[in-house]
Image (cartoon, rainbow, N blue to C red):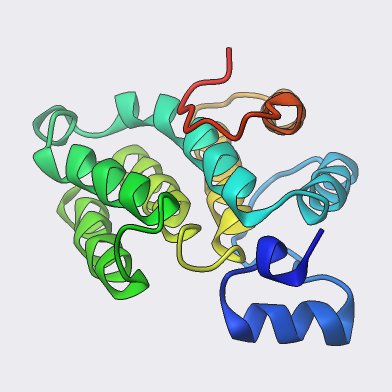
Length: 181
């Protein structure tokens, strides 16, 4: 894959060329399956940023149901997805997406429950993958953080993330699929 397909951001392109990868240990304190996280990192290194955006949205959207009730149908969610779609079609500048990313991050600040805050962070990081691919694993880690809060298995969640990545890889048409089922 071309470096421009791997990362759209010049800084991330330089990091990839110098270091061979972008990802590191989680900066979020969580109970995780480290082996599956490492397996996921390897898989994510092999996909384009376009595919990575689709993957990140697919792992984060199901968690929107955990937003506080007053935030679940917030128009900023649809706006963010619309702006992200336009970005993927190269119809607008990255600065527009960055601004909507800051806007969508406010959902976390407006959340009253910890579960809602983490679900919002997962989604806002997924939207930010349209700007920088490094946000993908952060979004993924927030998904695990939410699984921890919900007393769900981090192993099951990580395996689900890996399964979604494999489905995205199998989607050779590069359609803008927000669900890959």
